Every structure is written in C-alpha cells, then in structure tokens.
Figure 1 (tube, rainbow, N blue to C red):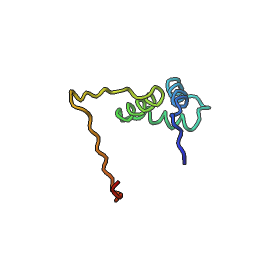
Figure 2: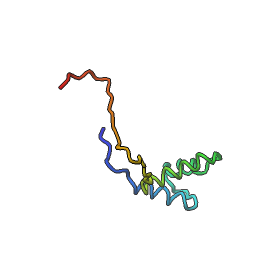
Figure 3: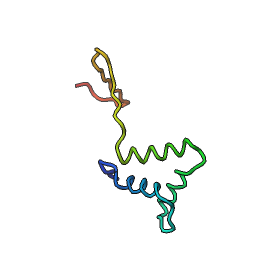
Figure 4: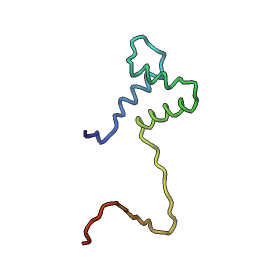
Length: 85
C-alpha cells in the first residue's frame, strides 16, 4: 500500500466546516462520527479532535530547535549485521 505524500487538507477543512455548523439530517456517517468525538464529555478528547483536524488542514506548527554552538551529531544504530566496507 502506497500512502499519499501530502495529507488531504481539503478533507480536514470540510470536516471542520461541518463541525462548525449546526447538525443536519443529511450529514454523512463520517461527519456524525467526528461530531460525536468533537462534542464528547471528555474535554481533552474534544481538544485533541480539533487539534488533529486543524493540524491536518493547516500543517503542524514548526518548533525551532537550538543546539547552541555544538554541531548536531547523528548516530544510526541498526540490528543488521552488515559487512564492513
């Protein structure tokens, strides 16, 4: 199975638009399921649902990393027994 390189931002935008309006009888099962999560009694779940959809629509916020004056070192460890070069 090959996954798309970019998330479907349009789908998240349509879901958020549907959640931000009043419930309609013709809402799809998907919208109804997301609405149930978005209106859950658990406030943390409500927050996480909205955050997930906004992150999918807008992309996650970039968090800068400061390593000071030290160069960034990378070490990759694998469990494979590779012959030396």
